[in-house]
Amino acid sequence: MKHTRDAQQLIAANEQLVLGMLRIQSEVQAAEYTLNEIVRAANIDELTNLPNRRELRARLQHAIEDAQLRGHSFALLFLDLNDLKLINDTLGHHIGDVLLIKTAGCLTQCVEDGDTVARYGGDEFVIMLPHCTSRDDALRVADKIISTLNAPKAIGEQQLRISISIGISLYPADGTDSQSLIDSADAAMYRVKRDKPAASSPPRGLRQRMLHMREANGALVTAALKAQHLQTLAEATLEHEKFILAMVAHELRTPLAPLSLSAEMLERGDQRDVPRLHAIIHKQIEHLTRLVDDLVDVTRIGTGKLHLTRKALDLAAVIQQAVDICTPAMNARSQTLELKVAPTTARVDGDHLRLTQVFSNLLSNASKFTPTNGVIQLSLRVAGRWAQVDVSDTGIGISANALPVIFEPFIQDEHTVCVNQKGLGVGLTVVRELVEAHGGSVVAHSKGLGTGSCFTVRLPLS
Image (cartoon, rainbow, N blue to C red; front, side, top):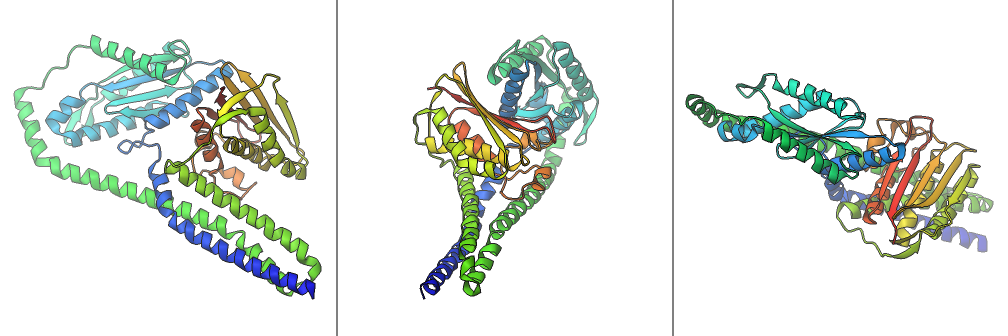
């Protein structure tokens, strides 16, 4: 009789759990607005489709940290269009926008894979050349850009040549941080601009014809450009929204099948199966809870509502708690965890819960993408005013295409999906935002598929 009551209570509890999961699906739909905001907050310049200033700084910081680790140097170009104001004043701002779009396309064609072309603002562009290790290499790229832009180009009904001034800075000779490198290249660009002969105004007759054309064609060109741009933006946003919502729905639906099946088996199954079915239900609830927690964290980050409760912490104690959380999963895969903690105490001003989340996420990822009997290493050391934690593994690695965007929300490396199909691709986004909220940085390294990966977290010491 007691077994019957227990089974009935379990069935009733499981029915409530299933109803709760269905309510979660409804709440996910209510979160669509926040997901849309995340999509629109992409780090891309709206006009040129190039990385914007925020994305440039992130990539530049990654390049600096990579160069520090490898002892390499790289070049930065700061570019400014010389005649954009004249074109805006005579032909109209819509023609100036077309000129910026043409310039962005030409700059992209002049660089190699792995280089970054970004719109810094207005008529200014910045190009990061990680593979240019000398000023002569950077000058060759600059000469190529000048030659390409100087060729006549159809802008509206005009054939225009794009004149540009370029300044160069080198890491670490001209600066060891992102702002000093940009400032140095900017100053070099203004020296080049100052030494150029002043541009002459167009003849009066040509000026009049330009003004007439501006009046005749301005409205039509503006409307066409806006319509085309809005259509492209709307289509891209819609496709991305569909992808995100489909992925969220799929991930939340996946645990519901074993939950429902377990509930049915509890109703008509053998009482000896109750512990096993209970374990299945518990595991699926844990998975659903993790998915919902990740969604909530991304929502808080996207709306600026992430809150930290900070106090002085011993980082080694935080790491040990993260290790305790992840050890059972590693033991289940017969994986070896090697800990290397420096004897010097690393004290940071941080949120204990959130920093534990950072390192447990990194260790959990390392375990998921490392095969059975693999090795995971975690090291903690003090480097100057920073505490540095490296989490590395002997796993499947990160592809070259995925490495630059591995921390972006809802991004998953294609070849990792075959290994681990669970998750929304937001765990590393949460790691990055939490680390940066603590004034630190996180960088991913991998030599490619099958070579393992390493994540380096740097946090300021108290």
